[in-house]
Image 1 (cartoon, rainbow, N blue to C red):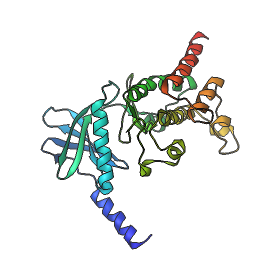
Image 2 (tube, one colour; image 1 turned 30 degrees about the vertical axis):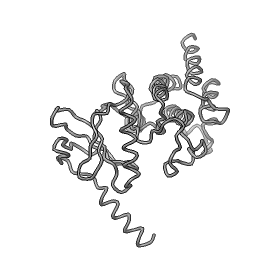
Image 3 (cartoon, helix red, strand yellow; image 1 turned 60 degrees about the vertical axis):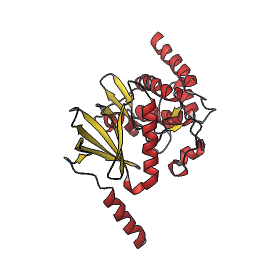
Image 4 (cartoon, helix red, strand yellow; image 1 turned 135 degrees about the vertical axis):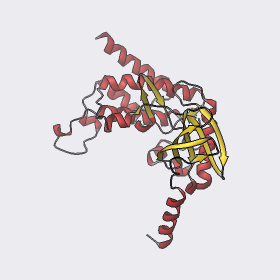
Length: 272
């Protein structure tokens, strides 16, 4: 690492350092705790001093400059256009001390990631597919409104009792819109350069695998890295759906095609 790269890293870490608990933002939002830092934003739980309610405050990451501001502006625009009980509401957006902020409702509960890796939750094949069927109602709504989420992962789905929430629209794009090169992973480059339903469906395939792998016993196999088709015991229909979601076979073109197959699988289970 060169001296310049080292100094650049030190500077970015300094300007991205989270604000302290108790800090008052815009004379209205008092920071209660720091939630975390992502690639392009810092997120806090705050107390809205006017309403007395806890809210989520997201700040564009200073070190990412115009890219983080553009993404946060995009997220503000997307959330402002969505009205769904399973998608957090946009409450406000503002500039403060030359920084861009977004305020959304605080969705309580636990992420699927926390349930699996901290709580030790185990999902059977049927439980995973029943859960994803409910998630697909939210994904389908997002697509119907002309957007692709582009970040459907187990940390971005929250369970609050019986309610499921899809959060973090920081990478959301309009359908058909070119995805910025620096935001595309290797998988997304393989899937294409524009935002399409297939991007989200590909992510849903991995989401299902994460849930089913929660009950996987690695001791049953001596070799490593066999892949899900060899390691998991799945019904033929689930294999069929996963192969299409993951684009091993000709993919689903939209959410409704996948939902039809998923409903067919669930109906068969109910009738057994």
